[in-house]
Amino acid sequence: MAVLTGDPAFEQSVRQTFGASGAIELRIVPGSVASMDGFDTEGVTVVIIDLDASRNEEMAALERMMLRVGAWPPVLVVTQDFDAEVARSLLQMRVADFLVKPVQPVELVRTCARVARSSAAETKEAQIYTFTPAVGGAGVTTLAIQTALLLINSGQRVRLTVCLVDLDFQHGACADYLDIEPRLDLKEIEPRPERLDRQLLEIMLSHHASGLEVIAAPNRPAEMRTFDPDMVTRLLDLVSSHFDYVVIDMPRTWFSWTDSVLLGTNRLFIVSEMTVPSIRQAKGLVAAIRERLGDGPRPQVIVNRFEQRMFDPGLKKADIEQALGADFAGTVPNNYRLVREAIDRGIPLDEVKPGNNITTQLRRLMLPQSAAKPAAPAVSGLVKKLSLSLAK
Ligand SMILES: Nc1ncnc2c1ncn2[C@@H]1O[C@H](COP(=O)(O)OP(=O)(O)OP(=O)(O)O)[C@@H](O)[C@H]1O
Ligand SMILES: [Mg+2]
Image 1 (tube, rainbow, N blue to C red):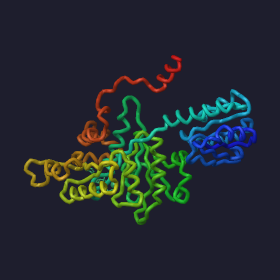
Image 2 (cartoon, rainbow, N blue to C red; image 1 turned 90 degrees about the vertical axis):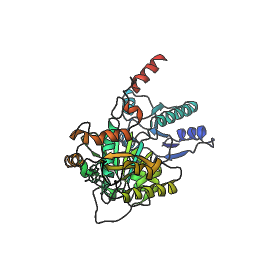
Image 3 (cartoon, rainbow, N blue to C red; image 1 turned 45 degrees about the vertical axis):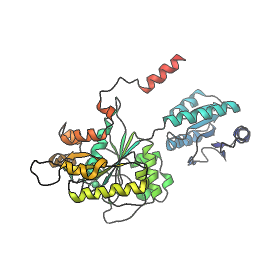
């Protein structure tokens, strides 16, 4: 717990209330929110701010802090007096709760426990889908983009939030394929990854007309360099706490951060071409990932640009099934004209041709089974909350 206060009496009461408990790590920071702009909330479960609401600069500093903190950790504000105007501002800033001095210890403990519990329940964790190549040019970027676009509309009633993250820093093509400006500035984040918060993230997101949010950096084709693994994991942690789904486009090279990205993945796809060498590479990659990640996500191979001709002497689906066994997820048909038009115009395949064969097959492979079924009438969260509170 972190407590920011300039009031010795309040400080003492907090120490008495929480200090004795070995289970709670108490960090008291003397000062005010205005004097402590940039107050670090890393690793904190509840923040208590002793606020002098009569001072405008304190209200403004609190507002900045709330923007930075986002949904976690919850911030509990303690004020000197009750003021309806202040209460309203605090509500708008999404402060978890507020108490007016003098605060009874029991009340403080209860409130802290409650805000911690409800904020934890509200903080979401994204489902992460990662696409990684067996060989160059297999279609990782194409399949990652189209999957991300499908996921947006896979919810029962609401549009889901989806973020596509292009981790192919050297040859990334996501922004190009979607015809948007890449805005991830690695140079700005790298020296101080801890600065990466929700506000900075918002600046670095590129928005696509479909509603898809994209994290992509301008390409540096002439630079072969790696980044601090901490920066990459921090970026992904942050993204995954703000979206329903995160879809990752991985590079072919194995970097120092690759293991941790793959470990954090819920569904891992290896994209292969329909050639013997590519299937062989995919098989080798499955084995390598298994060895490195153990019980981590199970890699599944997608064979892209699939074509089956009757008397073609080449690979057949049965050959692929035999070679890959249970690691084979399925095929995606070859449809170059469709893909090319979608890429050239920066739009979803479904917009080029509704009901096309690639989207249909991807939907089958990617979407949770429930999304394929007709939606059951769902009570929206707000209505549920309201009816619960009315029932009390
Ligand atoms: N199912 C498909 N049918 C036809 N063409 C496809 C299909 N999937 C991808 N392509 C085409 O294959 C080429 C490579 O695709 P893409 O850029 O998605 O691959 P990649 O694996 O991301 O490549 P890189 O290794 O360069 O990152 C593109 O020209 C794309 O249009
Ligand atoms: Mg690519």
